[in-house]
Length: 208
Image 1 (cartoon, rainbow, N blue to C red):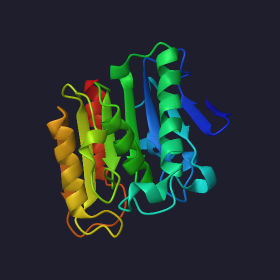
Image 2 (cartoon, rainbow, N blue to C red):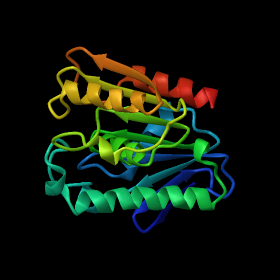
Image 3 (cartoon, one colour):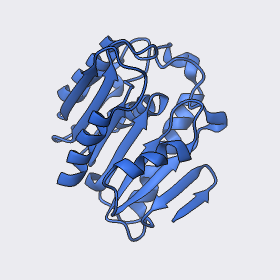
């Protein structure tokens, strides 16, 4: 099943019948179908898959390492769209701990930022080549307790878009807030999604 509503694409189980939901956030220049293609590699049979679409294929205009003010108002509106998707899942009767987040690249940054700003016990967060947003990390933005929520964060050590230190700093923020973080750094890797990350993701999905 593959349905659209405004700027959101749905796949998998209908929200009203699903026991779990995963919010899948695409990268810059991509679209919901590109990230939904990962479903072929992930254990998502009983999930509702929800993939929001960025305006003109970009969630915010500049690098995620730019000062946040430069990426406004796009960043705030992107975070609001993710929140609307979460509220829709909750309204359909899903528990917070059965809502998962997955993103690649710009979508991974957006997923990280949303979850850190709204920390609670979600099902899990899967960050493929991304990290928290801003020239500096403002920890005042990040409130709450993840209560041992699993976080998978993976990136190349020489990713052209994602500085290694930001990956490590993001991992540290999630760990400080009570998440169970699995960080994977891939030597000399490309800006891509790794099979290893998908396997780690499937371990989390299988335990849920």
